[in-house]
Length: 473
Ligand code: DMJ
Image 1 (spheres, rainbow, N blue to C red):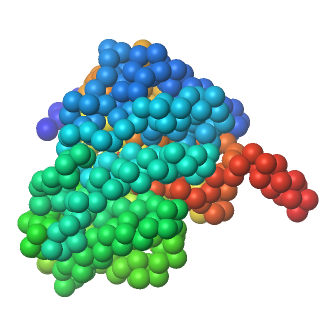
Image 2 (cartoon, protein in one colour; image 1 turned 90 degrees about the vertical axis):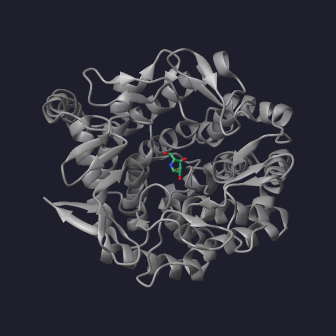
């Protein structure tokens, strides 16, 4: 989509500039625990509206007060409710958490004759059930997570071990063998945890096999492309990117090391990252970007960046490339400052948005929180605060928080959809970034690609003990 430069610059100066200046001024003298309380209040407000208008439905439409279904086309599985659970718990919104768990125990049933994306269902629903189980230990949640994984398993029965893109939850019928590294290889943390909790090794085995299968098919210069056929193992596209279709493949290589100490995954992560830094790293006007390149030659094929790629600075930091991780996150923060809210696509060569929409995404807040966990540099809190402030200013609607149809319009134009990940991701990243809550172990933890906490929750009794011992130190 083309955008007139004058319109864009005027909008950015009037809106993004003002928002950034206000955020910077506020951040200089910020009472972070008060900001955390505000995040919690926003979560409670949105949850209560979801409860009144869309209880048990997948996703609320926050402008019209209606709802839509995902990942099934016509049936609801309570997606937003399940995604919200561990966020509610870590915020101490305990009665709301209990009501949500009660709904899952009574109503969540994956025995539906309908087709779902294996990837989306795993990161959102399976991950949401597992993180809720981590929060409260209820065995029913684990049993439901296991039942769901069993329904996704048929997708992995391919000659390569890489899963089909879609599976029918009741019949196990599979569809679409041409899929992406992210769709194929974003399973091991959730599925490995499921194996650990159930004692059944099948989940970890298939997930790890799929991850290794993508890596094994990397090019001679150690890059992967966006599309591959899981039946033949042949690539169907040549574009290497850190954005959509490849993003969480890299993330789960590192995460499998972080969560399980899988040294082979760490090695694979390092091989992929070295290649990305060698072939895709581009510095322009003091900002760092990652070009899309041909996966076999390294030739630049596109300068457009997905907003989705803005998580990548956090991952780079986790993997030890702090200089690049910080710089890439700062590059995105500058775009946020210009537009107030990040557009879905941005071209670093023209410094123009390539898509005007904003899907209420969490990635920049994710990177800010991840980097803050590493070095506690206050600039990450400031970036997180600017993200939160802008969301409150532009994305808040009558029945909750919504995506935007145009971030360059004055005022920004709202659409009418609150994606399930909103409940699991940015609200949790903001809260953890600002709150310093005793319910979370800031030194030893693991958050999935969907922000689901699979390691690091502390129970209230434990909170008390740790607080006392921290006080004595
Ligand atoms: C989330 O569902 C996950 O983070 C996924 O890996 C990609 N991004 C979306 C939210 O934007």
